[in-house]
Amino acid sequence: MGRVAMVTGGTRGIGRAIVERLKADGFKVAAGYAGNEEAARACCDELGVMIVRGNVGEFEDCQRAVAEVEAELGPVDVLINNAGITRDAMLHKMTPQQWNEVIFVNLASIFNMSRQVIDGMRERGYGRIINISSINGQKGQMGQTNYSAAKAGVIGFTKALAQETANKGITVNAVAPGYIDTEMVQAVPQAVMDKIVGGIPVGRLGKAEEIAACVAFLAREDASFITGACLTVNGGQYMAA
Ligand code: CAA
Image (cartoon, rainbow, N blue to C red; front, side):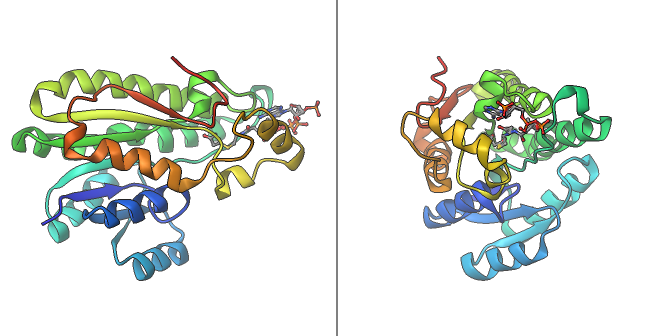
C-alpha cells in the first residue's frame, strides 16, 4: 500500500503536477484547494485523487482538512506545502491587505499545516515535509516584498524544523522554483516577462513537471540523508549556494 501524501494548492499549477507525479509514483494523494471548484473537480476526475477544500492561512481549517484526509486515506506521511499566492506591488503602493494575505497564505500556512501532521510523523518515526519556496525568496524581487519575505521565511522554517526532526526519521526540505509556466507567472505583465525570460540562461520558463520531479525525489524513502536542504530549480537564473 502506498504512503499518503497531501499537497496543498494541489489542483492547479505546480501543485497539480506534483499530485500527478506522486500518484504515478504510487502514493495515495490528497490535493488541497482554496476555492476553485472547477479546477478541483477536474483534478479529482482526471487524476483520481481525493480533493479537500480549505484555507491554509487558517489553523482550524487546516486541522479539519487534515483530519478529513486522514479519515479517508490514513495518516499523512508526506506533506507538500505548495499553496501560494502573489499580490505584487511596489512597497510604496502595497496595502496592509496585500502584505497580510501573502504572509498568511504563503508562510503561516507552513506552520498551520506542518503542525497538524508532526505529532503523527514523530510517533511513527517517518515523514517527509517539502516546502515550496521561490527564487524570489532567495534573491528578492522588486514588487514582491511580501512574497520574497514569505518565501525566505519558508527556507528558515525548513532548516529549523529539519533540525528538530532529524533523529525522528523525518526530513524537511525546500524546493525553490524559478519562473515556471503557470497561471501565476502568466499574470506578470508581458514587457516584464520578456525581461525575466531574457535573464534565464536555459532560455525559457520552467515546466511544472520539472518541479514535480524534484519534489518526488525528496519524497522518496531513500532520500533519507537529505534534510534542511533547499533545492534550487530555476534554469540558472540565480545560482544560490
Ligand atoms: N524584472 C525586471 N524588471 C521588472 C520586474 C521584474 N520582475 N518587475 C518590474 N520591472 C520593471 C518594469 O519593467 C518597469 O521598468 P521600466 O520603468 O524600465 O519600464 C519598472 O520595473 C516598473 O514596473 P511597472 O511599470 O510595471 O510598475 P508598476 O508599479 O505598475 O508595477 C510591479 C510594478 C507590480 C512590480 C509589476 O511590474 C509586476 O507585477 N512585476 C512583476 C514582478 C514579478 O516578477 N513577480 C513575480 C510573479 S511570479 C512568482 O512570484 C512566482 C515565483 O515564485 C517566481
